[in-house]
Image (cartoon, rainbow, N blue to C red; front, side, top):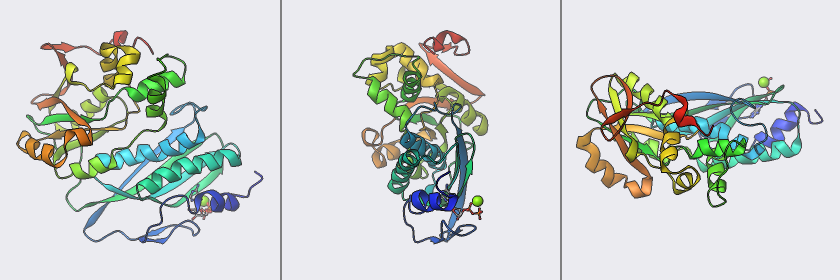
Length: 321
Ligand code: ADP
Ligand code: MG
């Protein structure tokens, strides 16, 4: 590498994220020193992105930087936590200065938008791999988990799942979409929007929450299992963006919304007694979420259409991939 490791860290990562007063020591010493506010619990998560496994190697470096942080922000959002500090372990095949500039710009813009300080990390040489560890906090006893859902709770999802899956398929040349839809869908894959503010607000309302990273139906099953309930999703109630409907037609769009990954939306349960208050405090039009089903006694996640349970286990609904 033309740049030494310490030059690289100083140039690209020392002031990449937000500046925060609660960082007593950030990048530069052997470890970071952080002040956790009194009355708060520390919430920690980490996710690794491997080139060619978690994203196509061809995508822009800024999108890789954005995504590496976004997936972790989404995990904290699902816990109702406020993000604060990130660590970045970066494995690079070479110190390409243009790539590093773009990567740090993508990471840094999202970090500053959420007031996240980059407080440390590690830099090594090898196949492109990005690991972010994200720390945040939540008021004591107010954390959201997958486990609190109860039979009778209403089930909601934010955003329009499926868009990112179509964006990935476009990126990989497995799908074609009209010019009116393709740029939007591609951007939903490249620059996912973690629902951080919604997650934090949901701490006061939701009984259970999970972020949708591996496909809505599969992640709904995880929420159901953790809450020891069953759950029913109405096929017709699934929100679909006009662009996804334009690209696939409404039927396949809904199927993709259930099965594709990379959405980073929030799936959450709310006691019906709290529904009116939820709507008042977090108006749906403004916060962009929608009821898609209910929790029931039993087990597993089922999708229902016209009173009939649909089967997504066969490949018929994954026809374009
Ligand atoms: P050490 O050998 O003690 O681990 P390093 O030379 O790896 O120290 O790192 C020096 C400082 O730079 C440390 O504070 C470390 O946390 C930080 N750092 C290293 N790589 C990164 C990175 N990619 N992003 C942010 N901080 C980094
Ligand atoms: Mg190190």
